[in-house]
Length: 224
Ligand code: URA
Image (cartoon, rainbow, N blue to C red; front, side):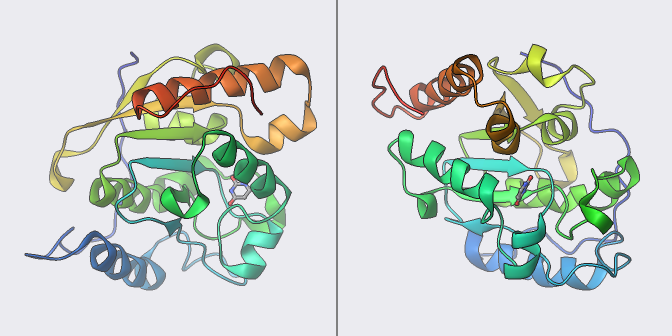
C-alpha cells in the first residue's frame, strides 16, 4: 500500500456534498451544475466545446479515472468515447462488466488547449471535483488509468511502470467524509494502444484481474 497526501488543492467554496436523503445521482447532478459554473479551471479554458463531467452508474462499485477529455470526448461531452475509449470498453467487457455498470471520469473536465498534458495547477484546480464525485459514489475500487490520475489520486511521484499492479489507497479529505478507497494503478488505454505488446497487454490484464478478485467477479485466465 502507498501512503498519500493530496497536497493543497485549490478549491472553490463547494456546496454540501449530499443533502439529507439525496441520492447519489442527484448529488452528482448538483455537483455537475456547480462545477460548470465555478470550476477555476473549466471557467478559464475557452478552447473546449463541452464539459466532460463523467458518466455511468452513480452507485458503481468500480470507477475508472483518466486524465482529461480528448478531441472526441470534447465534441460529445462524454468520457472515453474516442480510440482510447474503445480500448477501455474492451477492458471493461473483458472483466465481464457492462460500461454502464461502472462510472468513468477524468481529473480535468475541460480539454486542455491543443490537447496538451494537464498542467499541475490545472489538476489542482479541477481535481477537487473528482474527489467529490468519488466521495459521493464511494466505490469499492478505483482503476487509475495512467500516470496523471495515479499521481493525483495517490500523491505519488513514482512512475506508472513501477507503481502499477499494486493496490494503493486514496484517502479522502475529512471535509468530504474522509475514509479510504482502494486504487489499482494501470497503464492508460492510449498508452496500451501505442505500445501494443504482449508484455503491456499482460500487465494490464493482470491489473484488471486484481480488481476482479477484489470485486469478487469470476476471473478466467485469458483476456485483453
Ligand atoms: N483520455 C482520457 O484520459 N480521458 C478521456 O476521456 C479520453 C481519453
